Amino acid sequence: MTARDPAVDEDTFGTSAPLEIAAPSPRRGGLLDRGGIRTRILVWYLVLLTLSIAIAIVGLRQVLVTRLTADIDGALAQEVEELRALSSGIDPATGEPFGSDVDAIFDTFLRRSVPGEYEAFYTLVDGQPHKRTVAPVSLFEDGAVLAAWRSADEPTWGRTDTVAGPVRWLATPLATGGAQRGVFAVVHHEAAQREDIDTAVQVMTLLSLAVLLLGSVLAWAAAGRAIAPLRTLTATARGIGERDLSARIPVESSDEVGELTEQINSMLERLEAVFAHQREFLNDVGHELRTPLTIARGHLELLDDDPVERRRTLDLVMDELDRMSRYVTDLLVLARAEQPDFLRMQPVELAPFLEGLIARVSTLGERTWRSDAPPAVVIVADPDRLGQAIVNLAANAVRHTQPGAIIEIGARLEADHVRLWVRDEGEGIAAEDRQRIFDRFARGAAEAGQRQDGTGLGLAIVQAIVQAHGGRVELASAVGRGSMFSLIIPIAPPLEGGA
Image (cartoon, rainbow, N blue to C red):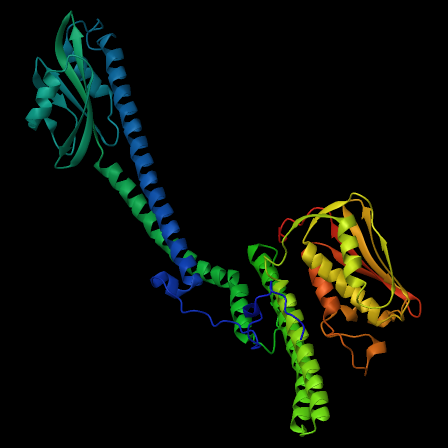
C-alpha cells in the first residue's frame, strides 16, 4: 500500500457531515436590548431631545433674567442722572439755583418726573423719610432697607424681598453746600416682569412637550424606515437554509446600511458557492470511494479455496485499498490547503531543486526527461509542497504520453515571479476540458469510461498548492501535440501566506 504523508493529520479530514448554519443564540442584555434596535433608537432620541430642550429652557430663562436685570439697572441709573442734573439747575419757584435746599430739589423732581411702570422714588432728608411716589408696598416701613439708605455715602445697589415680590433699588446720597443732607432711592418692583418670564418659560415648556411628542412619533416612523433593511436582512437570514442560499437582500441606499447589505449579499454568495462545492465534493467522494469498495466486496464474496484464485483476489482487493488510501491522502492534502500552516516557507534555489525533481520523476516511466533551469535563482516557497505539485504534473504527463516521449521540466525568471513548467508531447487537452480538469475528480474527455490509476485529484492539488503560494496555474495545450502546465510563483511570499 502507498505510505501516507506523515505531515498530514488525519483529524483534519473530519466528518463528511454537511456544514450547517448555527442557530442564533438567545438575545441577552437589559430592557432596551430586549426591546429591539428601533426602541433603543427612540429612547436615545427622546433622552437627547429632552436634555436639549431642558438645557434650552433653562438657558433661555437665565438669559431673560440677566437681560431684565441689566435693563432695570440702566433705568435706575438714568433716574439718578436726571436728579443730579436737576440739582445743579435753577429752582423754578425762585429763579435762583437750588443751592443747599434739598427739600426743593426733591419736591421739584417728584413733580416733574414720572416713574416707570414698575418704579418708585423715595427721598430722605437729614436721615428721615421725606416723600415717595405710589408703590405696591412702602419700603419706609422696612427698617433694614431704611438703615442701608441712611448709611449710603456713595451710590449703593441692593435687592430686597417684600410681600409684593422682590425689588431692586439704587440709593444715591445728595450733597449740597459740602454737606450730605439727602438720599435719593429708585426702587424697581420685579415681580410682574419675573412673572412674565415664568409665563414665557411655561409656554415654551408646553410647546416643547408638544414638539417632543410629535418628534417621538416622527422618530419612531423614521427609525422604522432606517432599520427596514435590517428587518429584511433578518427575514432573509431566517429563510436561508442549507438547501437554498439563493436569497439576496435588495440594496436601497448607499449609506452604512446599504454597505452592510452589500457585504451580507457578498457573504451569501460565498456561502452558496461553498455549500454547492461541498455538496458536489461529497457526491464525488461518495462515488469515487464506493467503486473500489464495491469491487473489493464483490471479489471477497466470490472468494473460493483455490490458492491461485485466492491470491489473485487478494491482490485485486489490496490494489483497490491502495486506491482508497490515495484518495484519502489526496483529500487530506486538499483539506490542509485551507489551513494557515499548510506551507512551510523557506529560501529555495531553483537549479538544485529541479535537479532533485528530475531524479525523482525519472522513475515514473520510461520517458526522455529534460531539464531547463535558470542559474542562481532563489525564491521563498515550500519546497515539499512545490515539489509535490511538479511531481503530480509529471505523473500526469507520464499517463498521457508514450514510452520515449519527451517530458521537460524547467524554470525561468520573469520580473517579480518565476515560471515553473512541465511540458509533454502527449495527446493534449481539448479546449472544453481545460478549465474543468482542475476540479476535484475531474478527468478529460479522453479518459471518459476508462479506468485510471490516478485519483482525479492531482491537478486540483496542484492548483491549491500554487494558490497557497499566491500564484496561479496556466495551461497551453493542443490536441495531438502535447500540453504545457506553467506554475507562476511570486519570488517573495504573499503577505497572508503560510510564511
